[in-house]
Amino acid sequence: MSKVVIHIGTHKTATTTIQDMFWKNSRVLATHGLIYPRVSRRVMGHHGLVFNWVQMDKPYQLRKGGRAALSAIAEKYAQTDATVFLSSEEFSRGAPESATDFAELRDLLSAFDEIEIICVLRTQWQFLQSVYMEVSKKSMPPRPPALVNPVIDSGMFMGLWVDYNLLLDSLEKAFEPEQITLLDFDMCRQSDGGILGYLLHHLGVDIGVAALQSVNQGTSNISPMSLACWVANILSEPSVASYALVQRIEMVLRNKYGEDVQPCLFTHGEFRALKDHFTVKNRELQMRRAAVQPEFAITQASSEGLTLYRHEIDSPLWVQLGRSLVANPL
Image (tube, rainbow, N blue to C red; front, side):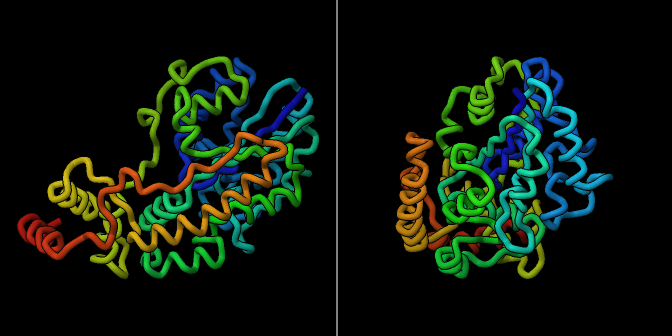
């Protein structure tokens, strides 16, 4: 019986690590019944499959287009006993102008005996913080004080679903609840072998992470320190902050607040507002999934372990940073 598993992200849930590792080890995985198609020679994730729906940079575009590639995958594997794993966080975008047509995606892969959607979800304040840092690499994101209320009101940030009920609404228009698997990011990370180990086990692959050839020590596209990124954005606005500036600020922060500092992009008040709002939304999501995934729950937001909030960055830190930049210009 053939099966296709579509891993749709979400963003900043180790998707790049998963894609890099599965692409690098695709031949080994194939010997264990899991097919990770190499649809591109340069891009490890299957972002080109989404190109017809989601606006992306040209390098992601496949020669014959995403629809043709999906049809070719179905033609090649739908009559086999293999499990095909497709992975791109771009499938999970929510903005109307860049949203996947899940009904068309389902139809393009309908020759498979079974379709499963896998979506990994992260506690919202952590998700927002990570997306903020990712956006900062190429453009200037909204300042955090202007970020929280619009996210609470709309359930979205930068075209991505933050209220995961809205993402589930979109999926359920095309797929049955039994075809959808939602996973908690923290639960996956704490599993044997981390999120890679969890996925291998879930997919029925009888090898562990240790049997795979490592890429980037098993961790790709790691985000910088959140408050270093924020300070760099303030100093560079409206231009994009350089990586060197972010690294210098992180060094200063660690010198002042300790190597083990655990920062939060938000203030105490913003953190509480996000926690209170999305705790309710996540309980709603948990109840919606109870019939098909009784064990599913998103890890609750917790301030435990956080040692530095944005409003706690004080004047002496700015002075120390200025002296560092004067003494050793970038």
